[in-house]
Image 1 (spheres, rainbow, N blue to C red):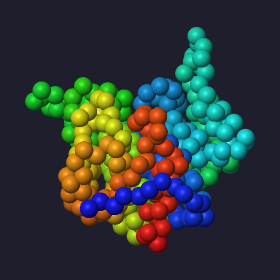
Image 2: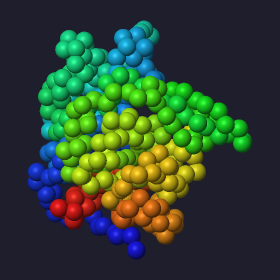
Image 3: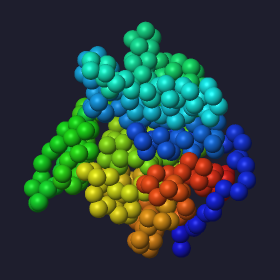
Length: 323
């Protein structure tokens, strides 16, 4: 039977393991908000395929990596003191105007400015992290901007959709994704972090556009297979409209296995309140080599969001069990 973990009742475990969290957007934000309570050795490896909004505009105009998901990861790593909470709000702030600045996030502009001054995306992100007092490091998964290409089925007809926004909003069912370019250069720092990690955490997040793309960067994928780290998958609390409509928790795992059939997983974490068929989910987890942990990690207001402290408590217990 799947294990069940309870609510947090004590203090967290101090310095903690070296954890690498993979993803992008709101899902990675949720993961990092919890993980920074568990460990001081935390690295986010972030997708760089966003082509919408402020990030898309900066990417098209300046040819830079899309900074939005990187910005959100840095904001998630800010502390809860006045300095951290203030800077988190500043970098997340978006201008509202009738002009060209409308919709741009302050943090996106700050990151891109440092990239232009320093000529190094990782150095620029490290500088922003120091300014924010971030509890961890943020790295792009690749050295160049990427496009996601999705194979989509709608009413029995297969079509190809290109671009993260288009893939996320497609009315059909995404079956598989690939990247353009097909063999993008991984960031060496991201590969090194994965190889040196104690734990690698996938999800939660947009499955096809934030989680699975890491497995399509060849050098990073090789590191994810070769690392001695334990691998954990945190499942979403609800399907994502336009991307994983009607997906069950076990279907998320089946898709992960299709994209990386040789990748073994150690733990699958699911919220106890959204699992209708624990047996089917446990079977899907077992096909990946994982044990299933079910726990109450959702926000108490009924929204499909993870509660940071609940999630942190369960992750901390899992990490302790494997040390």
